[in-house]
Amino acid sequence: MASYVVMQPPGSGVSPDRAELVRDRFAWLGFLVPPLWLLWHRLWIEALLAVAASVTLTVLGDVARLGFLAAGLSLLVSLFVGLEGPALRLNALRRRGWLETGVIEAGSRDEAEIRYLEEESVAARQPPRVGVPVAAARKLGHGPALGLFDYPGR
Image (tube, rainbow, N blue to C red; front, side, top):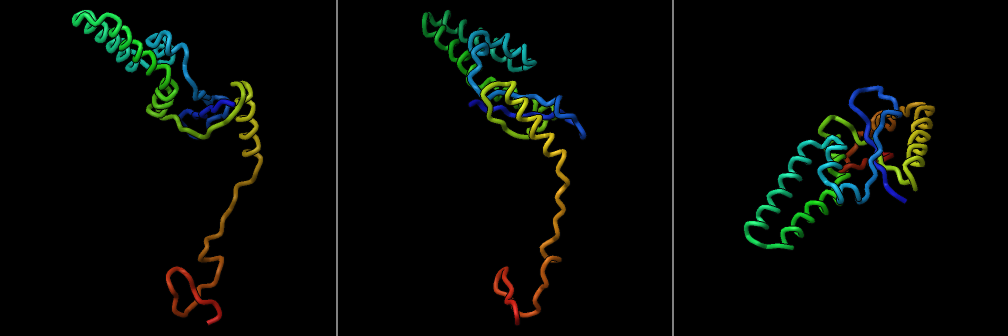
C-alpha cells in the first residue's frame, strides 16, 4: 500500500474534488530526467538549481579530468530528485498556501481518490460536535486543592 498526502487549495469552502493527492514514493521520471520532471510539476526554482548543479558538476569533472567521477556526481543530482521529488512538490504546494488535510493509504491513485471522497462525504453528513467546557460541566469545590485536583465532598 502506498501513502498519498492530501493537499487542499487555499480558500474556505473548497470542494474536495479540487484536492491534490501526492504519492510518497520514489519518482522514477524525476530520477531519469530531473529538470523535465521538475518543470512538469511547476517547480521552476528547483529545476533551475538541478540544471545548474548538473552543469557545474560536469564542468568541474572535465576541468579536473575526473572522468567517471563527474558522471557519478551528476547521478547524485538525479538520485536526489528521484528520492525527494514528492517532498519538493509538497513544499511547493505549502508555499502557495495549500493545506495538508490528511494522509490516505491505498493501492492505487484511483483507490486513494475514492477513499478520500468517501471520508469527506461521511464527514459532511455528521453534525458538528458541540463540547461543554470542563469548568461548566462540574461544580467547583470551595475547599483546598492539591495540584489540579479538588477534594470532592468537603
